[in-house]
Amino acid sequence: GGPLKGASSYTKGQVGSASFSPQGLTSVLGLQARAGMAAPFGRVAQYSPSDLGLDPQVARVPLAYRFRIGGVNSVRGFDENSLQPSGGLAMIQLNIEWRMKLAGPVGLELYAEAGNVWPGASDIVLHDFFPSTSTRTVRPGDVRYVFGVGPRLILPFGPLRLDLTWIPRPPDLKPSESPSKWKYPRVQFAIGPAF
Image (cartoon, rainbow, N blue to C red; front, top):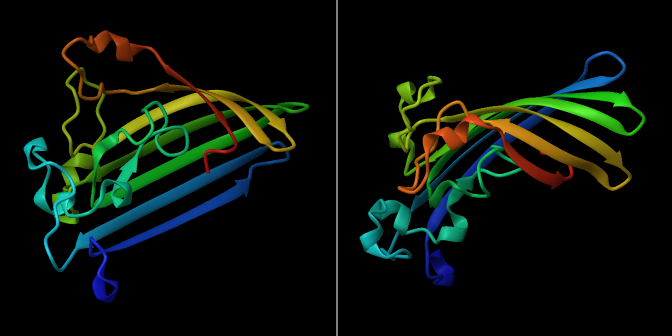
């Protein structure tokens, strides 16, 4: 956008921090926090069909440049970029992992993660951050919390991971889905560390 006359004009900023702290000789505690905001400016361009019920400000930013999280390297247990599938202009994500070496190249990881994407920063409200374990499906603004465990096989190119993730509250369900399916852990396979 701007003086180069691109099709979209927006500002986008993201901050993140990660730390790894040894816990004895065989384990490491990892923490990560990420947040971001975006805002369109200038000429109004629409990148998503207006019949999707998408926030008009969000629709002004191309989908590839909106915030979306979920998947094996952000909030596990959810499909890749499924929080929110249509994207948003504000994002918060928190991860904590306890990585333990068991024997040789075999390890284990315990983790808890939280995050969500909102249409804009003004849509983030404090009560969205309080976790609960109810059978009520989450609202779009609710922060998603997950916890899990997974074995690791440490190889020269990085760990092979098998994550078993529990989601305390079911996400928005399709009409054909049953809430009972979310009582069991979601299984995901990945190569490399989550962060």
